[in-house]
Length: 319
Image 1 (spheres, one colour):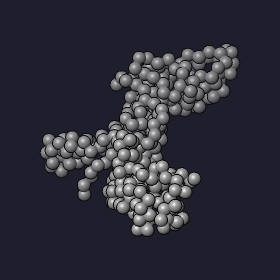
Image 2: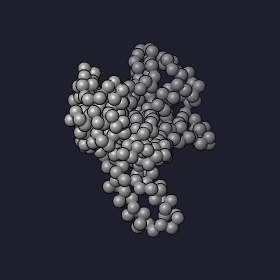
Image 3: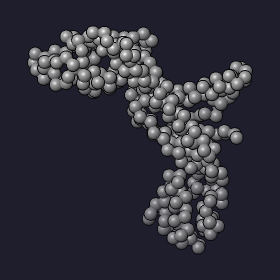
């Protein structure tokens, strides 16, 4: 089975959200690829998270604190929800020093060089009294996936070890759709919807997960006796296939498709060709009224071509 002309089309990018289509794929490979990449996106990418917390005057999570709406356990859970971008491979200490009536948020975290809070609007605590005070020292680390705290590390007095979710991908979903290339209809297309915490772009996250998948497959090949040089050579040659597709090039290719090659009835083809419509591109400015004036072209033919064009996001004007 050959994997030819696989391309990635950027359908939409807005801040930390992205919509990408990977196609064409052999039938059945849509789910294979999509599920593998999704698992890597959610569990194998690196990011930053708080792994340890000290709160001034607090010895355990059930300590009562005056002037705070939340209890200590709620504050710890809120801190776990903070997302960080960290450059250093070494743990970094960040602080919160808040006084008086205010809402303490991610933006109030005093970071060090190479560390930044991604969700600055995230609420940490509510100080409800003018005399209220909250001093927090948090350790931020770089890691991969999700890391649970070992039970024997939870008992140090006044120090709270936290389970850490390092993954920078907030959400990822996919749809496997039918695709075509020329007259070949039995192909798959995968549409990924990605959202990250901002420490990495959605496009970079998709690329990194693809590299991890390729590297893993290469190690399996090497374990089966394929020479390392050959594995590297195959990986390098595959990079030529996985190109980012220009939407304008996709549109030009689609416009060049001939009417006679479309999967429509002979009667509809004859009507379109006799009316001067030779390619899909010729139909971009067509209207319902102009098509219904074609020889032998009735509502049935119109509905047929309307549905075909709709698959490629071309809408016939209903005028």
